[in-house]
Length: 208
Image (cartoon, rainbow, N blue to C red; front, side, top):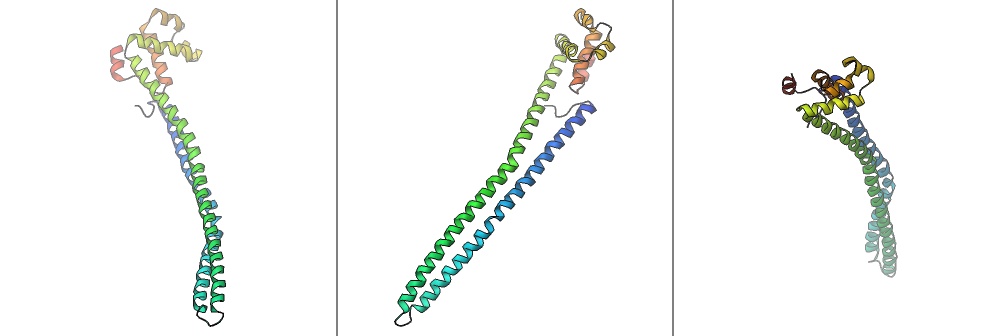
């Protein structure tokens, strides 16, 4: 499959378009990373709260275990501190779940920010390149036969500017109808040039 055109002007446009596509990919990845970092930063307070609540719950349980051995009020104090520790642990779990939800959202938004423009731009560019490659293959195949060359010449008659056609022959349409080899070959070459490619050397020699 041909990757780039033979003629410099068309090849330069293709390279510039591919470079622009690559630039969009890089910019999209950078944007996705920035969105992920920004959203993930929202989870930081929840993380600190969860860590603090966990530490508080551990401290209350440790204190309750120590005071539980005190006479008279030890059991009551230990029970109170145990319930407080359970409440702190519940808060820690809730904060942890909130943190996990925000981090998951950060991943999703980051991926969407990066992948959507990449899929759109790369998909469109891939279709353009594949269509061009298919047209080039078809044109080279047609250029290999006399009948195919007349088809290319007819396409050139339909698509090329009038001044370009008249520069080849005062009456290019009549010359094509008569099958004048020189004019038909020049018109076929004109169609190939519109695709940015040249006739293969072997085909040129065969025609000559």
